[in-house]
Image (tube, rainbow, N blue to C red; front, side):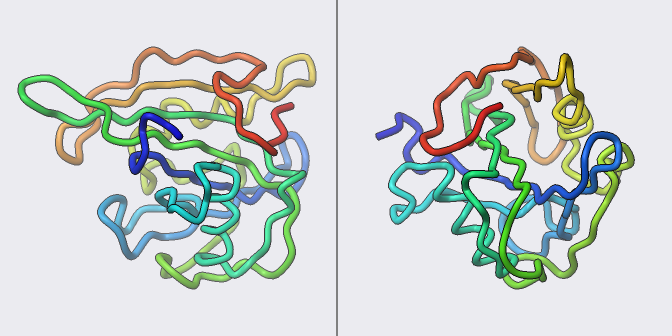
Length: 186
């Protein structure tokens, strides 16, 4: 069991196309505690039925929020982000989010739970001004390739209330910093 029990979640991005021609599905958030009115991938907090598996969580969230079934064999864990919020004059880890790119699924994505609309955006032209502020600092690196290999990103993000204060300790590699059972990492 994770030491972050109750503090972990997932976000998944449906991806179509290859290389520079890739497009990503984002939804405009309407419910929850964060990111209302902003574009973001489908996801949410890990629940007991996910058995502490980020891959199971991202699959469940896509069924609930978009009405699709993801192909877990074509789902790539590409980033883990730790979100820190103020506490007692400092910051404490508030939430860890595992980000996935999903390349195959069954069904037609449609906004069900948590989104007012969904739309496809080119990965090199995402609406960062209408997305959570930290994503502009690290998400573009997720779509870069080097020597034909996808990158894995590990980053810490610090917020004061809803305002981003800093992004630090970003590491970019070709192997995930944590193992996610069942996720493809190349």
